[in-house]
Image (cartoon, rainbow, N blue to C red; front, side):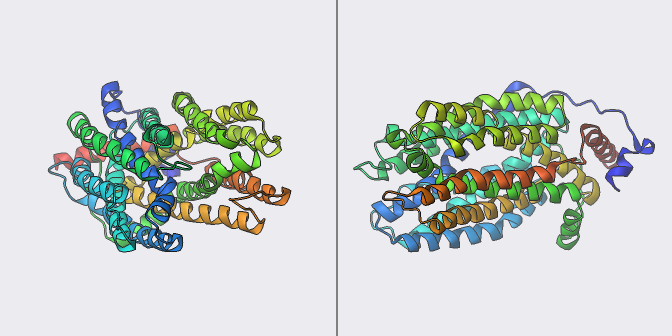
Length: 463
């Protein structure tokens, strides 16, 4: 069955009535994103400097351990996705796998963030295996839960938008942690107070948040119950044009974002010469992203989600490009630009995740199986690949232009920093936009797909 046939007059159906989810249910679902963000961001932001500095493990060894842990994580993603789709129907698939994931993640966070004084590479490798395994299991089940809980085109954007707001609050807490923990970059206490402080925040919030989630959020109703083989399932996914386009958009956008994140503090410190104020523009950006999320929830409701995402991306590019030409020392102007760019910053996660739920419906139509977990695992793998490629590309550009992180830099080195922080993300954002241009799943087509799925589920329930 093709999208064209779904849109043809012969298969047109009336819009199915989908009740608007109570605000309390959406908040109960979305709030779980906060402890997940608090637990995950330090792994990218602080872990290398913590184990390389405070614990005196050779920085190259830390890098090898991180790569090894990521390779393992990359391999198990599709397995965890498939397991969360196929097992636990009686108990609630998403609820069961979330409950299993939480204690594993908590144990991994404790081991990784609060290690013994003599922790070495083997200890770090095991701790990272544990935290990545639990976090991946939890995010796959949680993401599938959010994708399946509503079949309504607009309601899905409301769900993902509120969830992104909670995630950004978690990112903000982790980013501001050096201010209230007494540790972090430049602190005489090192990173131990910072990491232990964030660990206890995550460990306190995660079980409480999980309890709210499992008690107050209903298990999504599956509209597909079949089981297909792995080989057939992969063929169905590969032949799903919208799925592959969204996967490519996620990959390209992720590469640019990772290159940007890898050099962000250096950019404000070295390229714009903001000194001790270098962290403020990032905080301004995160705050603006939180306040911008409702705008993209509204835009996703008023126009097709992919069109709203294209508008947000182009607007962000136009504002962000100004930084390339900004003179040094312009603290106030920098913050204004970052605030305007931040208003578009939550659009990708808000609208992209909502589009992903629509693409999952198309997969269920074709495969006759509920595979939200597996497909979200593939998207997670693409994001992890993007993280590795983006960080590598950004750091390679700095190396090529002779950037010195510990000393003065000439204009050539500053140019390399600007290219890594601004030009690379813009180029990959444009590639991502090209994948979304004239995206085939419109609101009307999604409603028709959903109507077919729900009628099919009703017939199978009768049989």
